[in-house]
Length: 557
Image (cartoon, rainbow, N blue to C red; front, side):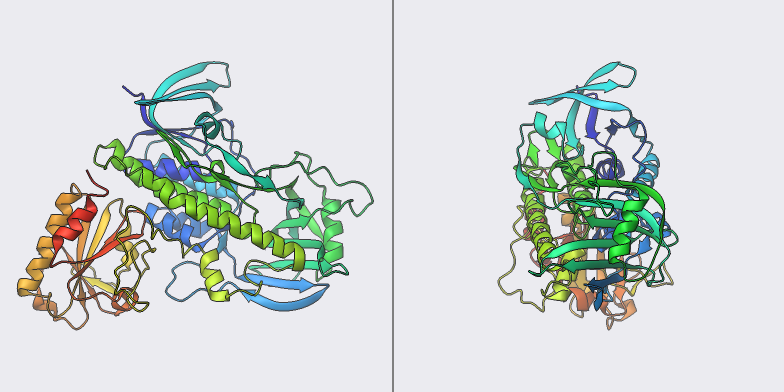
């Protein structure tokens, strides 16, 4: 018998997300971290809109919104001359903007959220060894007092960073290479009058048009507080060597010496568009990034996520956000498996879905890093389609079209027919329910650890035999999902309110604003199935409920 269902190794944002989601799904877990106290450094600070959507579904977003600040755009200067401002503007139906939050604050909020489920991080506890077995994973943990603990976990999730012992012990490879650029970073305050909420990128080009000097300043919570990333030159402004930049494999994996305030001031003296003084140095480091990708996200009962699975240049803050979504994708599948409700191969979908996403992110950030070195362009101002680049940077285009859990795209599903299976489920507003006098959002209905089935009722399915077909379809789906499915009838705005008696199951919501119809383009009598991680699993017609139930059996035993 196992001592714990799931052991999570590493209590950064990814490990904390995995543990919190496992607990929200009702699974017992432990989470350990070798550090006695969390790192007090900003490190990764960029929060993309999709991660805020994930944290909303988890029940955490209101805390984040109180602590984070919006990232509105970027001011660009080349050779001291201003270039067009980059606005981080998203379509109005997107609920959240880009934001910044120091990593230590992200970890604090996630740890407090996890504690609400009765689970605390076990600190100063280091993984000493891990040995996978057919029926569990044998683990040895070491504590700061020299004591050790042997335990068996049913599953282990390695969120222990780029040098992951979990990954090595599971026999997973981590291929890639170091990038030639070396960087310096600092967490400081500056007294310039540049617009608040905007980052600033300033570069100087050499005679060949390549970047010779660069600084990127990203706003953080606080008064004129910025996270500075600077291209390391051969020597500091004072003629002395800048502290060495080792081959770090994660942001901030520097030599520990960092920079002093004078060295950072020298960079600003060369590159700032305004005369400014840096102060209140909280942290600095020098580092060289790598790009690496694990060959498999899973080996038997052992999984990896976050930096343990992929590392990439810190362009656009993709690393932390991709890792959080790794954990979000895995947790609901692992929970169903632990509870004995999943198909035998459900856990294989974790690699099938997340490995291609990480491969794309790594490749894209490596290309952006090369563009930055050649011309000083950022990921959103390098000549590509700006709207698509913005949505991709926001991670709103992440999709799983080739997943074994995704219904094949219907042949007649054109570009105007709404999201296809595998896509992220878009939000919509203006839904009215029988017991709320205020409009609701679709994301309110998706804030659940269950699958959600949305059955659209136009004129044909609002009453009578059509309504009965919707109800029967929902009942069959709930049985196939072992009851772990919430169903709603979404009625068109023009359907009379008394077409369906109040109080029937499934409950109804009225698409009063027409946003659901605009976003999903549903056919009358269509059922849209959404997974616990907010991605469409399939679209079905309620007249043939067997197709829906057969599809659910890809997930549920």
